[in-house]
Length: 160
Image (cartoon, rainbow, N blue to C red; front, side, top):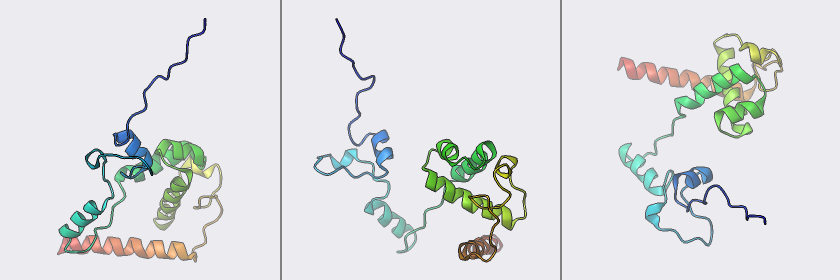
């Protein structure tokens, strides 16, 4: 006689860390009643209010975690421009991985640093596609301007 197949793991209730992390926010799906204490509020209005209180009424900008930058560097060194593999290594989507790579490659170009060898295999350009980078690209000009402003702000903060 055949035995019924049992799933290995029981589904976790909404509000547990894994389901909240998968959804990205602490909101329950429609038509699902949940206690407010069981929901993790990562970007709720309460979090925004507390950030505003700490900064005198202005919402603090969220900073990119250092692990994201280190993740893209290691992933590009290992997988080059194989975006599915890079995204998998970073535990993110392909589009987000390409966005991070675009910023990192622009940074390398700005600092006149060489591309990682694995990235060079698929093209010598400092772009996501491997084509030559256009130095007059509006996105690139804006990125360079922001980097310079951030560096100046850091120097002013240290000096003053």
